[in-house]
Length: 145
Image (cartoon, rainbow, N blue to C red; front, side, top):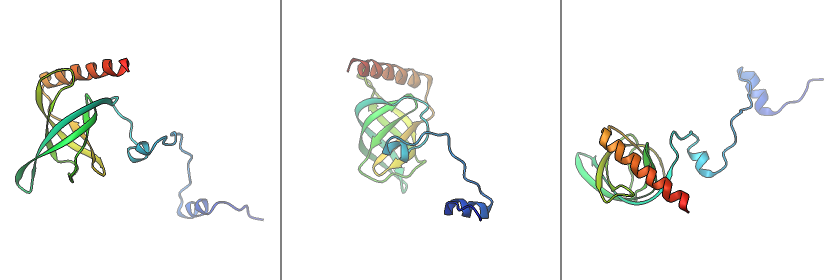
């Protein structure tokens, strides 16, 4: 008498694919399911108003956005309009802990409805230093709460 197995196992056997149990932990939150990758840098809470500058259909466009998190590698922004992934963007913001407005280059790496993940690109040493100081300031603020 043949041993009965689950239909997906049977199909896998027919196709020459055998199921393997993953050692990866199951996603704990909806965000983990949407963005299953590991972060290179810890996201820091930052309530910031930002302006995004980019080209759309040959014209220069500026959009206001809001951020609630950033780190040395990038920033998460909410934009009430559609952005394409992988487009270059210039992000204008006042770095936390300073009164200095900066313009940083970034690329749209991922999106979830109107929330976009931007990765910093082409940073100068001065910009990287300023970002690092802002992130250290945010870490101190986060540890106080």
